[in-house]
Length: 170
Image 1 (cartoon, rainbow, N blue to C red):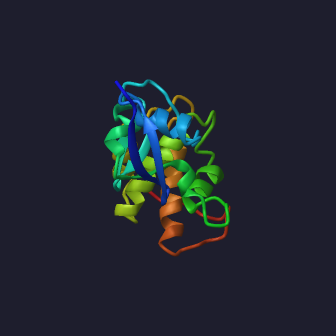
Image 2 (image 1 turned 120 degrees about the vertical axis):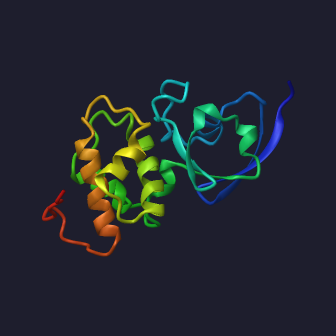
Image 3 (image 1 turned 90 degrees about the vertical axis):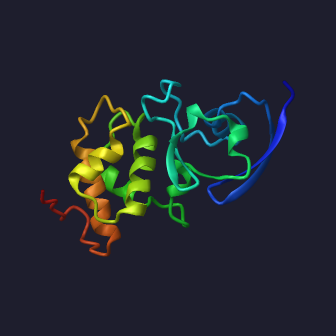
């Protein structure tokens, strides 16, 4: 099969590329665009390491071909950073609450929870657990991830308490 030209908006920047028809979106992001923050895990859509936001919804980028993204918008973990290059409130909360250890699942967790917070700025613990339910983590035990999302949600809603002085009530 011959390569096809695609045009994809990734993190608000338009890219035109020629790609083989069977190149996955995760491989396109990593190998063609050099956006290596999106991780390749199981390559079967089970682990969530490759999660990105596609037209506003979290998806597994290992289950989609790059040519299917033609004309669409994709957000990756690199797109979460603040304009000045600093951490987003969500990324900062993950760091502050130790919601990452080895870090392999972190980009997928960040994208899943970013999508949640975009649609629901005040999620319950159960809603957070539902949002991350398709993302596997072998290190944290998930509690710190839930705490990070709750802290980020609180800060993003305008509470902006001083770092290190937040308490998260159930």
